Length: 472
Image (tube, rainbow, N blue to C red; front, side, top):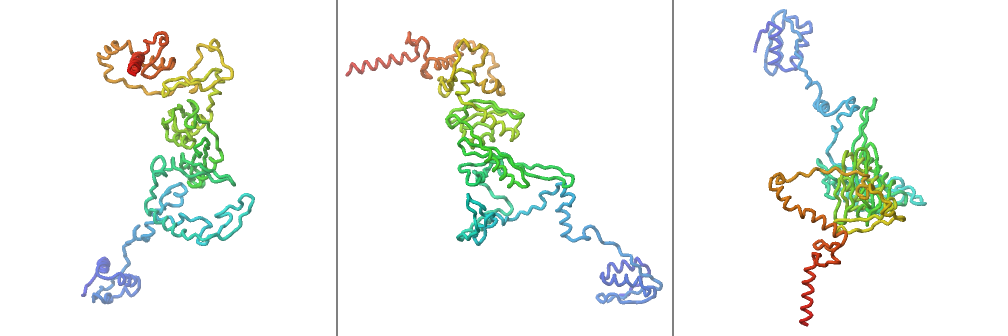
């Protein structure tokens, strides 16, 4: 194939579309040499058997277009790294925290430093250096044939792309979060072990501080409470660079700050009380057995670890977790015995409860009791106000039923006015004169038995007894 090319543009177009890249580079080199200034005929492609005829004084120039761009300057691996990673300056500013997370199996799980195939006791690694007064030395322990099978089973149960599903008993308050989750008893101190103790995570959060050189510094803050469910409890706060270390530090600090909390009959608080820390206010009510824990989930967890089974608590104001814990613990520690309360007022402490049909029960006896004349009329004798420091919890307004706005409701009130206080009066008579819930007594019962509502039933029983005696 013969062609006569008289312009550089035609030459370049022909080379671009009809010849290989190697041949194009050879021609570009020729254009820079002196040979390219003389007429010549050169066969440039053996594959196409093409012959290029150049006119006289035709100069080949290297007018190659730049085919490089952002996508072919670097390799695919470098491009992908640029998309998925963060620069060093960005890392210092806290960017891309979760970029390099690899969703693979953790082969370190189940491994313990110092424990391997050769079961050897290493002081300081897998055993304490000193146990009591004896110095522990390195020694060979009997082999554990089940170790490898346990590790393999543990790795097989691990999810490759999803976290392990926790059993309902191991979960916290909500899903996979740490709040409310059990983390075991505190570590033993010397020969003293925390037997029967359990620790719950109350709060786990990240705290970030800014530094001029290092940028954002992230640490973990963990608040835990430990208890033996029999009156002993302690609260601890720990911070560390990772969550596991913060939890361990907090748990051990809680074990070092144990306090004893008094309980009434081993199931509830000693009395109603009010407690406040910051803007968090808590009203706690003493309840009977079987009532349960009706309160905030954090207070419920504390009560379970302390051993309290029946209370009602109302929280007002801020719901800050640490303020909730501190307010409730301060309230529990400020409780007083019934005798202390009676001595403070110099009066008998009498308890009346609905579950006991308002029967008065003396629970506190003072050393010296005041007379009726010594008690001032304006003195507050209701312990619900005294225990709450003359405060009352905020109660929501009860909406009136729709029928109270109808004209027939006023007629009903007038019709039933004569017996509107009968239920309250019945309770008062039961508290003062005894009887049963269905048959109350009054101050006229002894003189006039017929005033007792149970009198007709008594007459009927007497008549039956007389008939039976006559028949015999």
